Amino acid sequence: MSKAKNPCNLGPFALWAIALTIAIAAMASPAYAQTYPTKPIIMIVPVNPGGPLDTMARLIAQPLAKILGQAVVVENRAGASQKIGVLKMLSAPKDGYTIAVVSPASMTINPLLDRAVGYDPLKDFTYLSETVSYSYVLAAHPSLPVKSLPQLVAYVKANPDKIAYGTGGSGTAIHFATQQLLQKLGIAILPVHYKGDGPALMDLLAGQVQVMVAPTGAARPFVESGKLIPLAFSGPERLAELPNVPTYKQTGIKSLENFSTLSWLGVVAADGIPPEAEKKLYDALVKALQLPEVRKSLEGAGFQVVGSTPAEFASMVRTSLEDHRKVIESGAIKPE
Image (cartoon, rainbow, N blue to C red; front, side, top):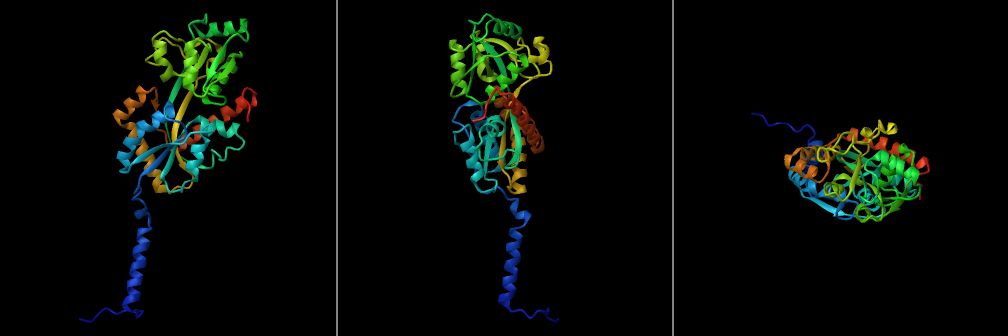
């Protein structure tokens, strides 16, 4: 039997070099890249521990880690209306190993109010999924002589500059949500800004401010105990846990017939991460949100599970940006 010929007359070392080159190329192929993730993933939370954003992140981090087969490390990087944490994520290598949880404050408010925000919400991110949404309840202190939203409107018109509402800070999601409602109602109430939703809610309970558009999950125990009077619910449908509280649409006020307000939380990465990482992260997020125990924990914390597609998430952010831009253009909230 004749031996196979070497048509290029290559020596053993040259043949070995070619084989090595082919092996390296194979390792760099898409099939190799699909081994992502091979190390822990950092999940940046751009706020201090506590509050909706941090709560959501910690409820999904462990199930997400189990699905991905790598640890998901929650890292709080608070400051500058979430800007510090978002910029930290954007400055990391674009390899899919650093992600962030975001909210309207970081994606649709800060970019409009802070001229030096340092990022473009429509260009600099890979949108993975809007994970959850949550509603607000317009609540009043019992000392205020109103039991419904129409009564509040009448009281404010008869007593201008006599009451104040609380927010978690100027330019926060609650500030915008309240101003949007007041514009629809055609009334003005003095805002009092706190360093967080929690302190604002505590002063509402103490009667230092008289009304607040408060996160439903945080306010519900006080509504149920009678310490706060619920006037209206911001979601599109009544909440099963507060069945006697009408939605904005159900108050009988004509300007609110097509008005509802939900806040949202989601997960993003930097623009330009590998497609394989993007797909694995999205698939893992959706699987985690579908787990019965995760859904139960999130709903127990006052969230509604969403699990949107990246395209749906990006579209929602664009719409939210325009809604908030209109509030700023009205002069109700001013850029820094």
